[in-house]
Image (tube, rainbow, N blue to C red):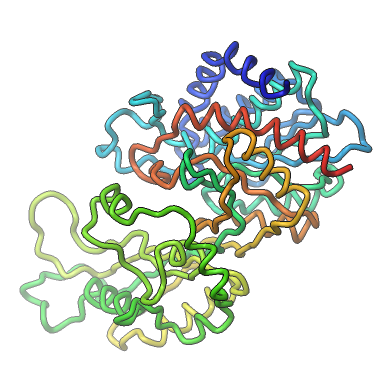
Length: 458
């Protein structure tokens, strides 16, 4: 009966729900670039209004030292369990713009998929919760208390969220955090993520001469910072793609053979994986599968590298400086502070004397593993099983949501990662997308989570 009510409401309001998401996607809410600041603030106001429209009480655009946090709640009975829904309304930069097939902030539908920056990460996913809440309110089917906390700085490290959480512990008191900012294996093989990797993100700068030099006059006599940086970065992996920083793996907990077997039981077609990415072969740490490399092993990746002349035509210079942005994904037992320090110590140590090296840490977060025997996890299992007519497969996520560890530390509550995106949705890349089917499927599944969470919490 409940499923019939859910499906009927979605059918009756399908176009409006899509139109509202499109309006949300049109805001260029890029938190990393100050030129978008007015648009980020407008996005927060839009989210707040949509929470009010859906039936939330005490909706507030809460100021921080950066971008505001949108809060709203519906307390139907203080004795009932409370779900805290987290999401973020900020998005990654759309660059490089020339690689987009359609404008990044003008949502376009092709083959049943919404193409726009933020379509999946995380506007499309958090807005499912707003619409599911509306559905429950309009059909008199809200079985527990709900609180919303939608922030605007996730893509730049959530620096002000921790301050807000610490100052609002009573306001944010809940029994579980529910997040849709992750992915499933596929709609044919629904899954639930049981863990996330942590993150250490930093920038390195290598400086040689005090100015750019003529590469003919000085080349061969003065160290080229771009060449030196490339050599230093290359040395961070050995021939087995093992990270060479001393102590990097000291705290890594190896999976048992049983855990590895369970993890690798998930459906995986390597040929399809390679075809989707247009690569000849996979690459990674020797001795581990793709699933293990992307979910249970730490990594070190160059996210950007530059130096010297990169404009049109030729300019024969030996650059004064070269830079790179580097991210390291961490697994349980590693900490972002320790790994950042290990990297810093090692990178300074391997720097040759003819260059100067500067390292600037940006942001980080801690790895987490969510319990699979909790009431909330079992509620998510039951909800997905009912909506998809299949039991979800437990997986480990390769990405990072730093605030998950923060919620546990400050609020003392665990998180359920119930995402509806796909790894192929081009998050952080040009032509990001989100399937319309997934959007509606999320709106259909979320009320079932609330139903089962309320029932199992009795």
